[in-house]
Length: 430
Image (cartoon, rainbow, N blue to C red):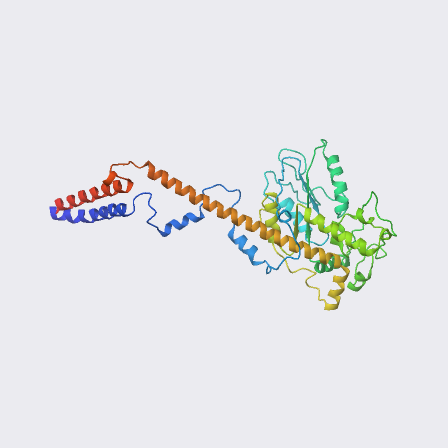
């Protein structure tokens, strides 16, 4: 090839070289003056370590099912809203699940034994109702629930029964007696929906007649707690018949199962007047609920999952599913019947209003704290990047520049020299 052809080949190469040197002149290393879209990808990169990653789709759904924010009727303190426990699954801590009938407790109970990401998952064998939930490396249970320890304190044991029974049962199950922290949890449900669901369940033959209802060391007498039906069960009961039984335990069940019944003489209704009894029961249920490690609401499955995970620093494998098509939802109610059910459950109605308010405030509080932590993390990441850039600039060789010299002057002088040499080469070739 002749000299002219060689020059034609070299010109594009030298032009590219010229552009690269020019870019270095305009945007020297460590400069903040040049921005490119590709840099936006850094936003999704975490430089500082975090315990959990954010699932934006999951959080979007959390926000979507939030009701309009209304002023709170209750003066909750920051201590009431802040819910995080140092649950030590490898130590002696125990989660105790208080399972109230028809609140979605069966589904939640299965989540506890089958859906938590654990170092040593619960051992659930096909065909067996109970799972073995041992601590890592120990033959000790960290969970007291229907699907782990069974109904060890009686069928659907309430707060009064569990707080007296669980420590004794755990000591019997384990040879070595250790000082344990018990973390009580439960699920609540809209009172009308829960009541209708219990009616449909009883209508199909459920009785729970083997429940002990232990209080003050004994079960209630027949006079204290009369049955609503004769025979083996109450199959086929109509809603009217169900509502007409004054001793029906479905009435205000959530308040009764969360209150300390010792405060009102257990099931002895003659120990005080009805007004005082109801006031004490409701106050006790609210206080016990507020002080529990955690409670969820059937109507807010995703938020329930979110708050449980943040409370115990545990993660579920699969997301909870919100199922709104239930037997209770399919019952066609007149307004008069709905009002009657609310009257029969007026303590539960007040408890649920309180529980829902506190639950949603806890969710908002926890989300805000998490957002603040994310902002702080991003701020720290930016600070870290700035420090790295400054260290990189400081590590560059410093030469004497114009007027005493600095990094910019040195860089400019170096690149000017390169450009001059580049022109010299091009002129020589031409």
